[in-house]
Structure formats: structure tokens, C-alpha cells
Length: 211
Ligand code: 3PG
Image (cartoon, rainbow, N blue to C red; front, top):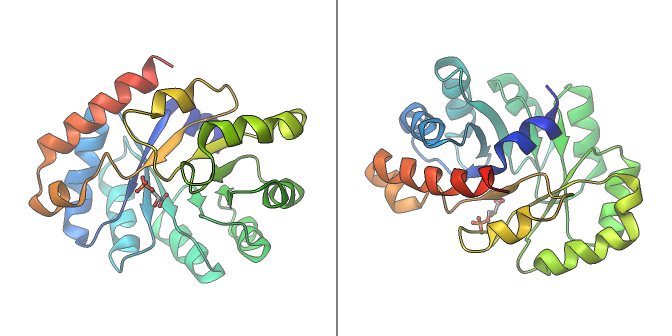
């Protein structure tokens, strides 16, 4: 899959922290129905691999990736579960190599010019800018682009992005998409409130469509 194109088309990527594997399929269906079919399931919980496998198996309209991949073992587990892309909050050349070895399209994280430079050297086609708001937000990305635009680098800002500021990010052409947990709030997930999550996805999707 062409990771950059797929993420660009979606515009906004729900970042999912799931504790109960049984919720994966109804959650993915609600997000797809709301208009956000590209999902990042973070490897922060024990349910992550099972959730990815269930979505890959039962929700063919969704494109499921794995987030918070911090080690080669996590990369392997994500690939085995059926993730079609991987994301990390930071840049670690060992993990980037593991993703290459596993043939998993991969988006490492950066927050500084030095990390961005290393990620480009490692061959990353795009980077997660994390934690976006705390690390300087749109202003920081625009400043980084001043030096790096000619490389063709593309960004996925995540961390503190929400419905009120996502439009500002998506207005920057080099920003492929934004990620965020606001579309899948803990309480709504716990309650299995799929209608609420579908509505949050629809509100986000409307902004992504109008970029
Ligand atoms: C991530 O994992 O990408 C971030 O923790 C998401 O940040 P947010 O909760 O501010 O959206």
C-alpha cells in the first residue's frame, strides 16, 4: 500500500487505545461509518494485536495500522496481526530497520530538526510530528519546512490535535494528515457508545473533506 497516499486521502486518523478486544470490530465499523476508515491502533495495551487482527479480518473497509511501535518485536507483532502500516512516537533507527525487514510501511516520530534529518536519512517517506501542540504546533512545522521542504518531507502531527485546531494543520500542504485520540474518547469507548464515536468521526471527516 502507498502509506502517504492512503493517509492523505483519510486526512484524519483516529488514534485508538483499546483495552477490550471485543470492542474492536464495532468501534472500527463506527469510525468507517463516520467517514474515517484509516485507523491507528496503539500497541499500548494487551488488546492491541488482537484488535488489529479482528479489524483486518472483519472490517475490510477499514485500513488498520499499528501505533506506538517502540521495538522490533512490536513491529513483528503488528505485521503478524495484519497491520498495513506502522507509526512510532519517536525515531529509532533499529525500529525503522525492523519495519523495513518486515515490509511494513512505517512512519517514525520526530519533534526536532535533528530527528527529522535522521528520519530522512533512514528513508522515512513521512514523519509523525509528536507531541504536536507541545512541540510548537503549526508554527514549528512551518519553520522546519523552511529548511526541509526541498526534501519532500511530509508530516502527520499528533498530540494535542483536536476538532478546534485540526483545520489549521490540514491547511499546510506538507501535512498529509493529523492523528488524534479525541475521536475515540475513553468514556465513550468504555460505554460502547458507537453512535457518539460515529458522530465524532463524522465531524472530523467533514473538516478533512474541506481541507
Ligand atoms: C498519540 O499517541 O499519537 C498521542 O498520544 C495522541 O495524542 P492526543 O491524545 O493528544 O490526541
